[in-house]
Amino acid sequence: MHKTIFEITKMDCPSEENIIRMKLDGISGIAYLDFDIPNRKLIVYHSGNMEQIEKSILDLNLGGKKISTEQTNETHFKETENQKKLLWTVLGINFAFFLIEITTGLISKSMGLVADSLDMLADAFVYGISLFAVGGTVTKKKRIAKLAGYFQITLAILGFVEVLRRVFGDEKLPDFSTMIVVSAFALIANGICLYLLQKSKSKEEAHMKASMIFTSNDVIINLGVIGAALLVNWLNSSKPDLIIGTIVFTLVIQGAFRILKLSN
Image (cartoon, rainbow, N blue to C red):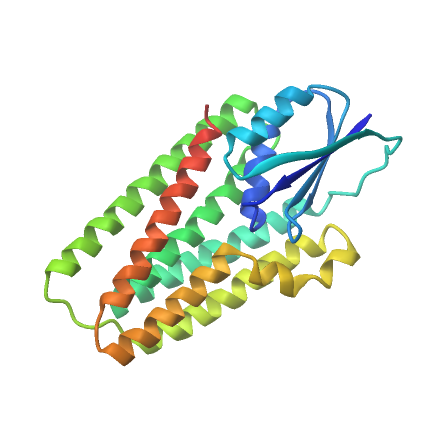
């Protein structure tokens, strides 16, 4: 048995973890994958196929780099019985906030909230792919990933079109107070998701909740929407909301392309 450590610089939250798991699924010889999200490390326990494992990780363009490989006698790995239940929990949280944010975003005329709702939906897609394809063939997982990726891109493009319409149209200012309140709750929701997923792996990682939260792209987006809301109120302009919306739509499309890579 070999133990290979990878550094994954762009692994910011559990959605990247699930993308990596799906990418490596089906490669023979892998005994266990141990993810350390706060430190952006992945430990692969395997008995062969090192070149295929490394190529698969590099193909995801998540900043993957092999650090070391060594022999190990370890054969007892952490229990993962509760993983499916936890994935259902975080999927439910993400999908619920997708509905909340897209509804309040449309009502308050905030493209920042609408864009953040799609980011929540993107995470829910990744968790859903992992759950609904459990026990299925690699072909089935790739088919689901392709559908999710294209759907995500379609929604993001529609978002870009709406941003352009508002730039050249005469739109009312978004409700900055709604933006702040909803984003604050989304911030808490993302923190809970990260905490639950990391707590399930080891007690030692549970106390690292703070570092996990503040290194997450999802949380940075939430803070960006809050900042945009403050600028909307201060400048009396909708431009900050449109700018943060554009940035998040771009991130959503990048995430969609990552998912589509799983179907290759």
